Image: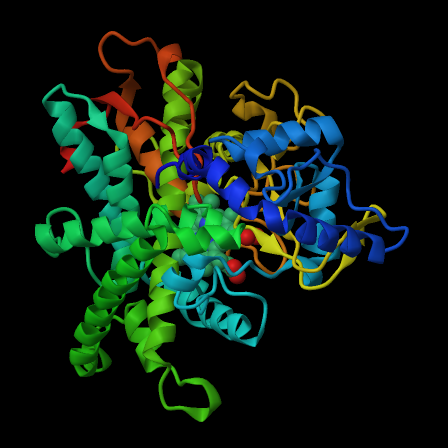
Length: 526
Ligand code: HEM
């Protein structure tokens, strides 16, 4: 997924004057509404925050990397900051204690989601799990994910496919290494994540030897990328109603077009699965869509609605592929940038796995240093810089400050990992900082201290964390065990660029290109 804020930032520069003039007449009215709202709350004060413009609030103070802007605001105003985005109340924090308050102590209040236009158009009217507001529908669909799709037993049953995909990954890289060429790691890691997810979800591999064909793969990739891009977009129409009316760049129109194409694609998947359902029942392995087609619907209906199935398919693809691919690319970039870290990872792999076989999933729990590398990657480059923004369902207080109902919550995990009050040398990639003194296993997906939150916590925490951790560790373990890595000709390790772009996930600005050199016997790669 690519940067989205530049869209928003360039938009306002061009249109600032016209909107400002056309809206001037209503400034006073809206302004008086705001002051009424605040004075109505009597003595309770909103958290501190920067001064704001009429109508735009603080929108104009944000640039292309809003997570960095928000962190700077926390630096200036304190751990909990109030901002106004157009007509929307919002708070941001990079502080573990406030995050614990939001996600644990007041989870009930803050576990909803804003209804953005992208979520309305592209997540079946917020009828999915990830973008649905808190309520019985979200609860039911989330329970289906937890009890039928992401169970330990079902994930174990796909272990063979994951092992196949890990071998494909190694083989793909090996064929490039044999020619002495550089590998585009974004492409191979993207294909690895996508294949793992689509095999589990749809029973299909989209890239590689047994793929469903180049045309379908390209169509699938194209739609998925458009979808990610639009879902990550922070669209001015969500904050300034007048913008929606103008829609100068046809953004909402594009959302509707993608909505239609995605829906056609999902309808085709469901139809294909319906046609073969009897065969599957008799002899086959059930993928996620087969499972969803076999479940009863709401209110005693025999089957789930197609719309619910489509929304769940979409969630799984969107939530699972990009997050693990982006994390893997960052981890590879940081390790290649730090040759001593690569050496330490390989020493661990050589002692635990040895040179005569490939890494298996059962090895992953014992690779403590590699687990630290993943944790350090999440500290510096969390896949979701703001998790998925939450929203409050009623007014409340935090640290004595008033938080209105329907406040949008930007938990800044990027800022948390670089918060100098809790971490030393924040810009330094130092995996050993996570090694427990007692030699116990390094936990990746959770921690009681709220200092790293790759998968969040509370009601909205990621239900795919165990699978996500396995996909990340497996790809890295295989790539570091099988190959030595160096930057492309002419670059030194320290030249590897680690700037990010903002989006729903936060990838490296430039795809990572590196040169692999095999380090195991040739027969192991085939
Ligand atoms: C490295 C991999 C992954 C990372 C870093 C990750 C991270 C996250 C984060 C930060 C959230 C938002 C939590 C919040 O808003 O508080 C989330 C939500 C979610 N994730 Fe993941 N995720 C990963 C993999 C997966 C996988 C493999 C699946 C499923 C197959 C998945 C399914 C979901 C779903 C359905 C939600 C929405 C939960 C809800 O709103 O109730 N994720 N994930």
